[in-house]
Amino acid sequence: MKNKDDKKKDIDSLRQDLEASKNVFVTGYEKLRVDQDFELRKTVRAAGGRYRVVKNNLAEVASEGLPAEPVLKGLRGMTSLAFTTGDPVALAKALTTYARANPTFTFKAGLVEGRVINIQAINDLANMPPREEILAKLLYLINAPAQRLVTAMGAVGRNLAVVIDQGVKEGKFQS
Image (cartoon, rainbow, N blue to C red; front, side, top):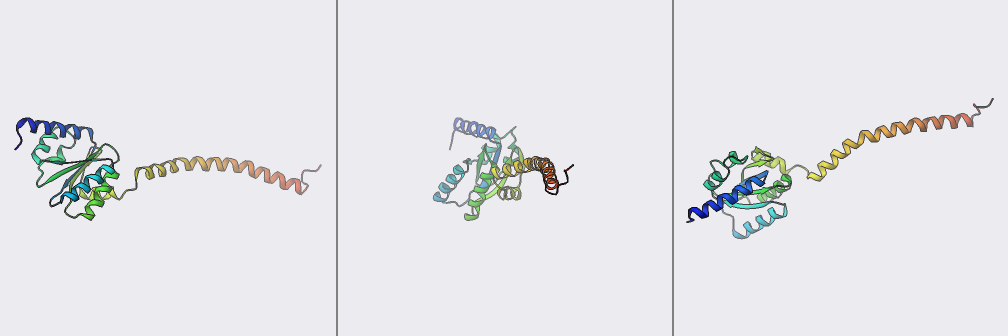
């Protein structure tokens, strides 16, 4: 058993991680083998996140006064946290893909950009397109009206040139 000083260090370390992370996924990992756990940690790191196994009561104490407090209250069973300061969609995709391959890995709750989300919302988040694709679509939508305006302005001059050309060919401008 850990003594009070070690528990205090664990709580402080976890509190720092929770303060720094806007996105936290609370998961259950019962019956995962060591090789499966290693693969999970590798998957989370590849998605730009961190993975940590926590004791339920220490997580509850560490989250007091933080946005993650409602998610970490009253946890039961074996609990782990996957958290990131970056793109929550990438981490949700990685965790969901891993959960499909390993049914013993489950979601309990999540916190995305300071908002508590349920398991269905985590799956919805995992099905979203990547951040870069969303930004590209947004830029296209912003750029489209400007392109149409320039095309319309160019059409007036082009149409005038066509009318004048037709008039010259038909001899309408002869005196």
